[in-house]
Image 1 (cartoon, rainbow, N blue to C red):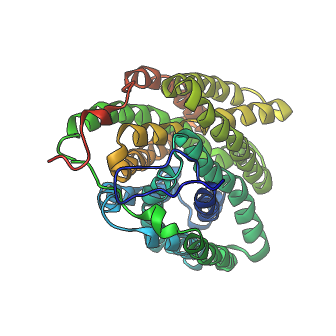
Image 2: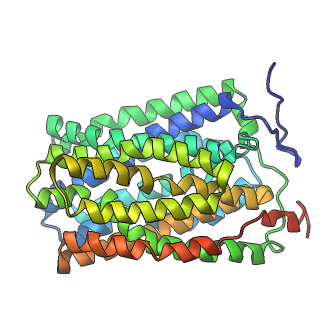
Length: 404
């Protein structure tokens, strides 16, 4: 029996999970984020090549996040027009920008390339989850888990690909890996057309933004607090883990592999925790994983050898668990403004990531990265009260689509 076709021109959405339309976007997320994931393990190379401070290195990473300020604007139009082309082209554009970073030794040009890549990244992440959310039926948490698992797997493969490419061709030859991003865009465009992809990108009838402003505030103020205290630890690992291990005497390969171990452990983390949150509740999952992540980080910086590897796996499992839950919460609370809600979540995440990156870089310069990891793990615990303050029921029931 075939799944019923959804209609996105009205207010009805199928309750069935439509795998044939979810899968192409998940695979595209994997191909797209491979390039972003390759940035962190190459930061030590740029620090050495351009004699950068950790703060300057962190600023390069921050350039990837700043364009996320455009996310609400993208989300506003995504609820009203078909932005499928953005999702299709993003892997190619991001690949072109980040594969070209080895062609310059100028810091400002490098920052510009990162910024342009960040614009492509912001556009993709503002629209792609909405495409999945619209065809995930009642299993939005699982749909978001699959989407995030694609990105998480990319962050496992990306560091290894980046280190292999630089070892084989040096930074100057990094441009050769651009072919994967272009191939992903071509295949995605073909598959979305074959699966009726124009339908999953077509807008629903949006609800009134004016009427949901109080509900947006009730949801996003706690989310801002959560991410403000969450990102120092996340950036300690995702941006500075290779540098931290290099300072402790690890080779480039070992440093890059550690990041891959961390991100590979996050794949089952996003899959399992998103699925569990569909059953036991979003806030319960967020609170438990936050506590576990903080404890794992504190243990990791005080052990070595195989025990450190085991703790790093646990840290990766819990650190990546929250994002699909946040996306599911946003789309459930605002089903008639999915793209706006999703883009606001992404904006909060991406805008506050540079704050975390710069904070860790500053602490690393003045206190050392070991101390930066320690304080970031403690700060992370401050997110638990904000998690408990998140709304507990569907706010969207207070308004109807099309209200003025």
